[in-house]
Structure formats: C-alpha cells, structure tokens
Image 1 (tube, rainbow, N blue to C red):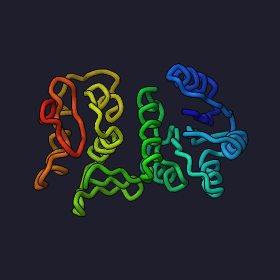
Image 2 (image 1 turned 90 degrees about the horizontal axis):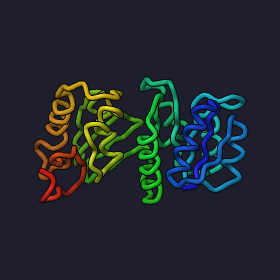
Image 3 (image 1 turned 45 degrees about the vertical axis):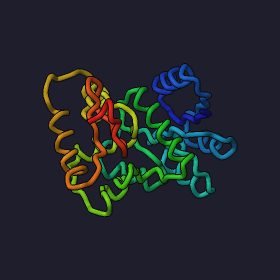
Image 4 (image 1 turned 60 degrees about the vertical axis):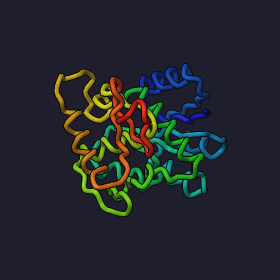
Length: 231
C-alpha cells in the first residue's frame, strides 16, 4: 500500500515509517497539517494516517478538507484523546477509524488492512457488518437482524475489535493489548467472562452463531463456523 502519514512527533513518525516500510508499504511523511493536505490532494494513496493535533492545520481540518474535495481515501486518526465524544467528533469529520495513543504497530497495521478491505468492498468505514450483525461507530449502536442489542462500553469495544478482524483468529494477547490495554497477562478470566457475556447478547436467540472459540488459539467472528476448529 501507498500510505501518507501526517504526524508532527518525529520519534513516533520515525517508528511508524520504519515499521510500515519493513512491512512492505510505501510511506510518505508530512510533519504538519498544511503539508499533509497538500500531499493528500496531489497524490493517490491507499490510506492516510493522520494525527489529531498538528501544527499549522489540525488533523480534523485536514480530513474535512480532503472530504470536501471528494477524496474518499480511508483515513485512520491517531490521538491521545480517548473519550467517546472525541472519537465521535473524529468520525464525523470524515475519519474512518480512530486509534488512541499509545498503540501497537500490529494493531495499527491490522486496522489499516481492515480499512482498505472495506474501501475496496464499498462498505462505509463507520459501519461494520458481519452477516446480519451491524455495529455503527458514530451512533454507538449494535443491531442483529434488525433487533437492537445493548452493550456495555467494554463489550462494544470488544465487538468492534472482533468485527475489524472478521474471519481472523484473535488471540487472548491481542485482546488484552488492544481492548484492555494490558501489555501482559494479568492471569484472570476477564476475557472469558466478557466473551461469554458478548456471546449471550449477539448469539442467543439467533439461528446461527457468529462468535466462535478456536481451541488452543483464541476467538473468531464469522458468519459460518468452521466445523473442525470452531465451536
């Protein structure tokens, strides 16, 4: 992928450019909003990574101007601002996903891949679908087969992460790091409890299960269960 990174933190930018380049991507870097906007409107990119707070022109202004010009390139927003209102503001400005700092390179890469998959399939970045299950990031609403499902904030974040990795095995370590912000295993059953609660809400009373346990590996969200590995 050809990616534009708009990030004024030189240390963070160096880390991302190095990591993404080593993963085989072609990276352009802009250190301020004006330069980022100029590059974004004059070049073709597969995805943009835009920091929320930038010199000269803030990240949301960059995104809004790009969208005003009709450019629908997938945009991942990076920000140290973690509350729900900030995420909603970022998504309403035209961002497709919102990743809070600190973050792991593995999650950032996975989110970019998910964004580009959705862009190529024509699915809007703020609404995720798996079968008849829908998650709306802006409205903070989950439905299945048209039925509203009420989730607690952590359950919502867990489902969001699973849906962003639809069809992939998600390990306990990935969930701990990206949903709970633990960079170690606290040796508790917190994941098992939350998965059980989430499964009871999105699968109970529906004909076919979507959330599957993959023995010895983790969990997978998909429309049709693998008869060998999932249950």
